[in-house]
Image (cartoon, rainbow, N blue to C red; front, side, top):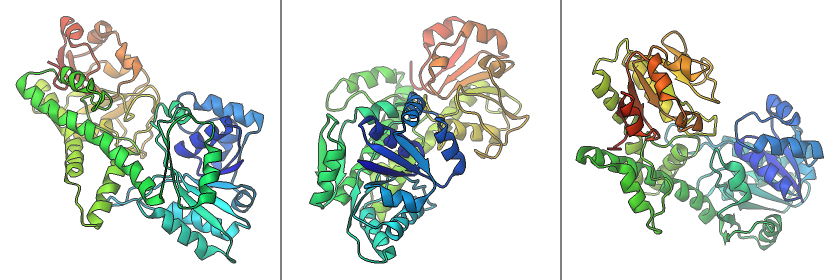
Length: 435
């Protein structure tokens, strides 16, 4: 089948390559010349383990092509996946500008029947809007169907998730489109949920919001554990072994971030409020997540003193989670912003993320600098703050690090260090309720 992927970002590139693996011919369409040039050369413009090798394989085999020729790309492909961004607006709702632009382009250039698939995370009712946008730009009535087919990829393990999905959701009222989508996904061994577009769109938001809720739940519970002198990791294990609950997303820490959870939770809240049905549990989820960096900041002040002015701290980890270079809504950057307001000096490190001045809002300079090695980063510091659970940080030589530091303080934002081991070395260790 000939498939067009509109938008060659994280979701679009991963989706396209998986369809290549399933034997389909894929075209990636984008307006960004630099992205296209890199992809043509088999190089990713973002970090995702295993994906660049797959890209190189299919580029060399000719299974995937990249273009900025909208007219030609729309005309020659049977199924069109919309994989463009839906950034958060000031009121929390999703900005559908890019989706609308794609839909209007499809209406303008299509000459025969197409299946148009929204892969981007979009609010309930978007499939109907896409239908209207396409029709409004057609010069003559040409049949098409719009399908909602949300993605459920985790950054850092997107390739595995795409090849081994828990479920595939197909939202359409068209028998013809449903048959084409079944054919497209016939090689996958997982449950396929066939429903209407609105239900499909809500499934994506509901899933991400539920996972965010689990994170905020255990983080709020960790505060009680702190007060009671209880190890929250024991509690997480005890409740996670209940099959009705499950162990995932029950790790206490600095909270959730990235391109999905913050945006999707806020978008669902906006949809609910617009329809007069406030989701009060989710409102608290957002509040707890916003408080987590301040909660860790209080712990840092308890250890180093309430006045952090002039103190130098090493922040290890800038991405919102390990195995990705995504810093969007990263708890690490939120904490750094708080520390800078306290006039602390920041030394940062990340195995993959390389910050550039102006890209994150941080004032990169003498008081906020990124170093290339962990040794350089911790040298002369009053404390080490672990913000991302990279494997590299789990294997640190803490005895060697202590010799480089001014004061031996560790603040573990991910509960990833063995408390007994570092305390035996003479460190003052603080985590999230890991008594």
